Image (cartoon, rainbow, N blue to C red):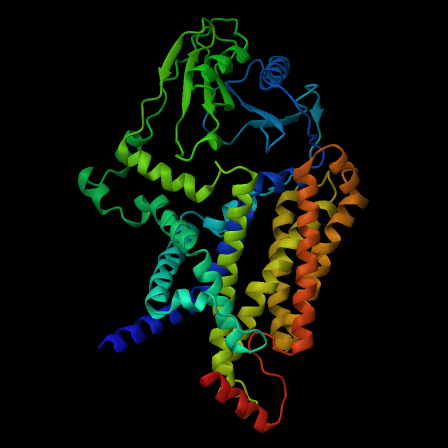
Length: 528
């Protein structure tokens, strides 16, 4: 009975990993890139300079610009520069359109001089962040699909622990150049090495969307009125309405200074001004969430913009909200400093590798059964194509996204849309290529192309901008330099992987042509 239970868990582990493995690989990889989404966005907008600036001084410059160009707006929003995001951006909306996306004007300012910066339009790192849980699908279908994948990922993790009764012993076992055995050893090693991270990141993703996937208790408690639940959870701020009488807005820097004292040194992330220029103007200062683990969904203070009176103070979060905020903060990792953020990134890559090696193992074991005949059934060929396109093809798509950012004209109206289109076009072409080419050749060619694209990004950056490695390092712009160096390192690693696959003749579990005796020996070795 015990052996039968473990076999059942092994079956469940295998098939849940296969059916959702390709999707999980994309979710894990884009989620891993999201840990550096601010740095990616900075690289994709090289026009924004990195300079040591004062928050108060930048806010004063932004206020002056808005008073000159948007004095009659119904709302101002100022996003302040931070250590990771050096940009100072402002946007405003016409009266009566607050809360809507229409009639919205946005500008990028130099945080040191207040001058207008013509930064290129791009989705930046936010594209990977959104794709990670929305999969570029209409709301809410992408979230449903990614959450279902997370649930099955949790099932795969638990069944994997049950199946591998010698899981920690296997962690210290690695047999190189042993075909499928090496892939299995690698799968076990990366799985055990970052198992706590895998469990945390998967479970926390389910907690984040708990109200969507487990709405029964909300429906019962609020008599089916889910809007009442969210209104109680996130109450709207009581912003005074405009009275049509002119009023002098106080310096916004004074509100940020008072908010910092109230938060015991906490930093402001954004400032919102409602009804600027009116006697009932109000100022809301939102706190930066990067200085603590527990993510606060509405950490802000509201002031009367004319007389400076404190209007509202956010109440302490309830225990359920603090619980959810803890998992939310752990999942996003925004609190992490540079070292811990790189640890998050490495653990995310390990999770991506664990999924990829699992897909390789599944196909390799079944290909061995057909090694003698040399004929691959259609279903195995389909899995092989999907493996190549979902892994090496996705890497090509990511690199194509970055190349499009540098090659598309800066003045192109729909350049951010075509950056995303370039991502999916490259991904689709990789699928076509994997269909037309055999497994070994497709793997080697796509990995080699991905290596060339990534390794060429620093050179492309140097040819198309003035922010090459020499300049960024000299100026201490480590976000720009780190991106270039990471791409160069990724290109070197992928070129090594392509060379190893070409050299060994093993691509995704495909055994190269041998004599019938050698094939039988390989099969017997894997079984034993």
